[in-house]
Image (tube, rainbow, N blue to C red; front, side, top):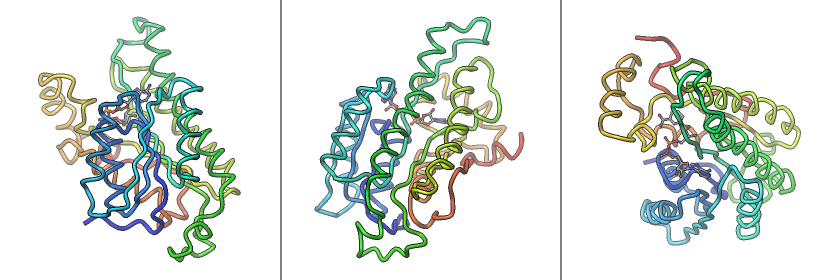
Length: 278
Ligand code: NAD
């Protein structure tokens, strides 16, 4: 049984059609949230996630809105966040999972188009989402006022919380993906800046650094998955893939009021990968 979140607020999740984003939506539902804004480019995947969220709990009052959104487009991001705010009146938790990885080679061989595409989704796109989330959160009442039944103390109350999905590759390098590593490092810097700038508004902003997670991103083909499992995964202290749910559970914790003193932090969730090469 998942740990209950103190405030069953509105959870907005990008990249919700697959992998970590999908698991995060389900984890928020199991934690007690009933209102969801799920964003992704992939509409079919969003519908699947909606069905899984609805089936994952016995609550009958679950409300899931799906929004086709390309996080690389400012217009698309503004439109999706505006629609979610209009429908649900507020956004308590915004978890940014949308991302891609392109192995384009080392820098001298790396096509500019691939560099720009990764940045436009993994870094600039995530920033666009943070920006809209912050605009909504800073103008909404504290959760202790919006959800009086949750009995949140004024010290631990928040207007909202953001969780950005970065990567262990923000802090260590892997061959042939300079744009991905750079974008994910940018996410950590951005997380710290937003945490600082909006601390007085009581908006917390944190990042998660997943290790090697068993999701569609790491399964482009059976050969690549097998290679990952018998090579880099074996060098992690736990010697296993992480599960999307293991990232999702930390995202729920960081978003909720139990993490009320945590902001600007980068949490490694990686089976010990950053602790040392095994
Ligand atoms: P995934 O491929 O299963 O999910 C990524 C989701 O992002 C997909 O649903 C996809 O449609 C969506 N997406 C891609 N481009 C988009 C766009 N322009 N606009 C909106 N949505 C878009 O991968 P995942 O493993 O669940 O990855 C989730 C996040 O975790 C990513 O940011 C990824 O970089 C990060 N991450 C993953 C791993 C891993 O090992 N899987 C490790 C570290 C970090």
